[in-house]
Image (cartoon, rainbow, N blue to C red; front, side, top):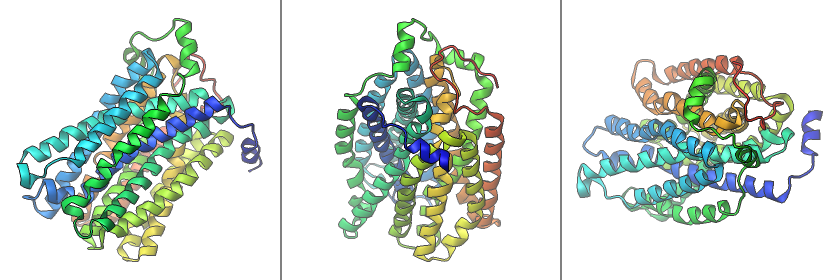
Length: 442
């Protein structure tokens, strides 16, 4: 505790570092706001609007499948923009990915439904979801690297946590906007009210673009560029020298993603569809859970600067696994307060702890020449394996003889796998990330 307090008493960062932190955070908030809007809509309205000819369960599965498409394209975006970030600079990727995400999200809010244009509606939905996936795949690496590479040696955990704050803040904003849309549409949420949060994304994109255009390039990258040591083919270098590290880093995140998309996405469908509760019950609980996580992520980032990345990640995985066994029994009570408690601990403690270190841990695992590519691809590949199928598998387990108890076992197994991978990786919080020629020792 003394170490953490002394860390907090360190000098404040200079104005440029503060601007970079703000740009990374605000941009990530916007990206995750757009992304989480789709996740929430896929649980609440897309089955009825884009897959009406399916049964309720089949329509939900089809909607979640559309949601999962972006996970497949996120590693593609990571490779495209990771390579550009390692060759041309981190800042450029942040501008392009923000525009891609914003435009595609606004377009989703303007889409016609199945009733209006038939099969063209779900096709367009899938296409725009693909664009979202590519954009987010490129966004995270650039934001995390800009924050970490601008920060001081002893504050990388804290500054790497700021882009991670974008996820709960985006979720918080998305849940708040969805709740507001339900209230102001006065019963017309499914017909038109759901479009409001998507179209409102335009305002956020303009704000984020203004902030990001004013920050400078990463000093670590600029130094490497001046030395003429940028990688000609970062993708080839990553898979030649850091293949094992990529696989272990990917594995260390799988359980975190399984837990998050079970708690934050599938549970909304479960509460409204399986338990028959009003849509805003889940959204309010999600709003509270995201608000708690918004506060805890920077605190856990500071803790990781004091004791290391792996202990904090391991602690988060442990909470996610154990709380996964209690989460659905709390939901099944139908009590708003117990449901809020379930979301608050799951997101604010378990996910907040594990998620906080990834903005620093993943970049620290790779050398400067290939950092954007290696960190981005590892981070996004985990989403394909862990996050994409999680709502789908949870739906199938609920419908099986195992019920929601099967979901608890699923979470324990996924988190145990991630813990094993995390412990196989080296501790990184005291390493020098300015060394452009560092290679994997795993």
